[in-house]
Amino acid sequence: MGKWMDDHLKKLAQLRAENTAGGGQDRAAMQHALGKMTARERIALLADPCSFDEIGSTVRDTRPPFDGKNRNSPSDGVIMGLARVKGRQVLVYSMDYTVMSGSLGDQAAWKLGDLVKMAGRLRVPLIGIIDSAGERLSMKNGDVGLNGLGYLLRNYCLYSGVIPRITLLLGPCTGLLAYLPVLADFLIMNEKTSFLWLGGSIESPDAGSAAFHMTRSGQCDLLAGSDAEAIEQAKILLDYLPQNCWEEVSPAVEPTESEGEADELLEIMPDNPKFTYNIYEVIEKIVDAGSFFELKDEYAPHLVTGFARFGGRVAGIVANNPEELSGIFEPDSSDKMDRFINFLDAFDIPLVTMVDTTAFVPGDKWERMGVIRHGAKLLHSYAHLTCPKVTMVLRRSYGGGNIVMGCSGMNPDFIYGWPTMEFAPTGPETVVHAVFNKELAKAKEKGNYQQVFDFYLGILKEMFSVFQMGKHWTTYYTVHEIIDPRETRSRIIRALEATANKHEEWPEKKRSIKPA
Image (cartoon, rainbow, N blue to C red):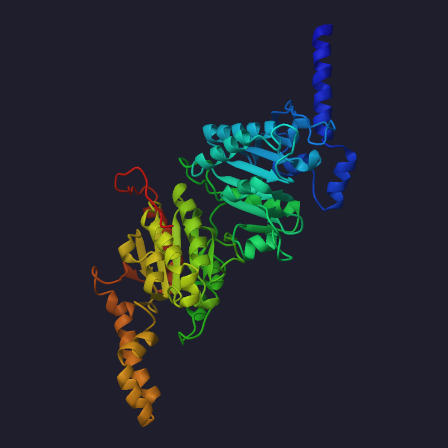
């Protein structure tokens, strides 16, 4: 080897040494003291051994710093490249907090923008790890060049629905950069160290925290107790996702029977419809054992969303939970379902809805919160779904909740119902009060109010029963078949098999327009 090549290899070795050191041992020690891994440690834990190939490592911040002090910026604070996760090709980036607090520099924004485009072109998932103080300040242009940030955000939006995008927020993320994790398909936050905030004053002690974004803003999908747990969640989540919108989800595990005996399904639902039950008890007995992976579990818990497998096939589950607020629909649950089913449709993942709802909640408070507008968005989304759709009605299916959960008129591929199912424009009790108010008033005077109320209620419940509605193949809300609850799992598995090659198209148009 000649001296000329030797000199160049020494420069490369020096460059790689700088990149490996990042912001230095002191900054790395500070990360560890805060309970956080360094950027490279996170990639090493995420990626299969020896599978990470870095790109963009020579990039440095070329602008003068805001305070005039020169600082080294290895990789411009963003480590990125090719990797394999559980054998699957992905692209990954990790923001390095040891380099100027992970602030986003101008060159880092441009190289991240190109990474997004590369992931879309290669048709592979993009996994991002964010730990950043926000945009970097400099003497030139004040902060990160907005062209670079605009380029990054535009590409991130354009490849929505093309490739799965998972973001792990394991530290702070503020300013305009806060849009990036929220634009991801799935956001995992470290409940101890993450902080997400656009700007402005902070008025509550939990504002910006992971708990805040899980329970109040609904922008977080999964909470983790550590960086390692967050990375493991990302790996599990990836098992349920395809490489891109053109490929099917490959079974990650061999199908396994559900937990518990099918007969136990007969004991879950109470005899009195006024009482509640927990939908998780049903889910765990119909999905492949241990396969249910819930999202946003602490946000609008009266609606349950998540992935599962049925006979090895991946599907998304949307289920009302009567244990929480009687499974009502309101703005938060509408938004929760809307985002999830749009993701499923983009990647042609089947949707299984499990229905037991008393419909959309009425009243001045909810009208002020836009319950109609949020419900309309959900109706709009379900109407445009072309992915396989299976509806399973367990008990109550009332009002608008019946429609957005995939009633017969909304064109699900299959709709089944337990014999306990009722279809109604609203709860039968409400109809009794509205229609028979004069008779009830007379009964109250005579002292036999409850007897008269129960008489009319019994008539209406019989009218709303699936055994009456099921006589009509058209016109009324109906089902393809009334089933024994013990058949639930087998019916779903067969439906997913039957819809594996379905083809459904929208009316020809450039795009649809969602309600505001």
